[in-house]
Length: 240
Image 1 (cartoon, rainbow, N blue to C red):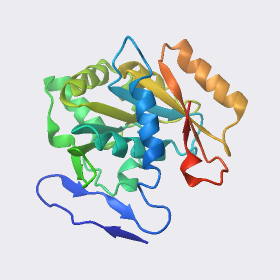
Image 2 (spheres, rainbow, N blue to C red):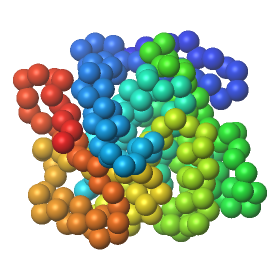
Image 3 (cartoon, rainbow, N blue to C red):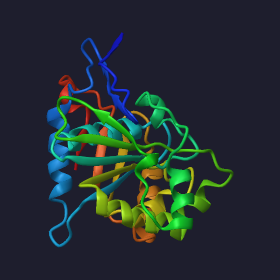
Image 4 (tube, helix red, strand yellow):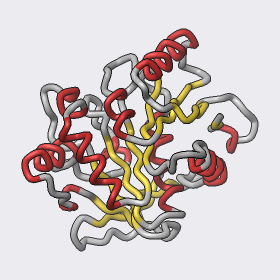
């Protein structure tokens, strides 16, 4: 069962969908605060203000990690942005109960023409725990070749522009072994978090995925282990 908090109908502002029962949205808040701290202090010579989240294959809880990190960063920073760059699966808007009429593909296309930042493509989530608002850039209009969008100069330049407007950016990427898309996205952010499922991830496949990212100069900050069988539910996610 789930209950919806009051939705604000002004502009593109929405309230987040909260789950009731034992597995609530913020049950793992302390764990993700710990992960947030590790990300913030993962580099001494570079300020980390944007990360991409990827994994080896589908169904390793990559998008769940992305969303929970976005929520916990939004609790500390006033302007946090989460982007759905998984242009093949395009499910983040469904998980967050948002429309997907316009999004990343549309924003990149327009930015390539105008070179101007336009917030009209963003949705805004409100919650009492947030320091400000959480901004969401959904995947947008489906395109025939997502790699052309994410590997374009327009995307790279758009990401640089977004960094000027937000305190922190989280990009949900497709899995590494399904497409090369995590490489250009990883090169457009400050670092990448690699998600590993204790139940689903093949060790050799994960090693191959990480090596592929490293060969392409993607800065891997660390990994998050998901779906681990532990007695304490708060240990479901572990960052190292």
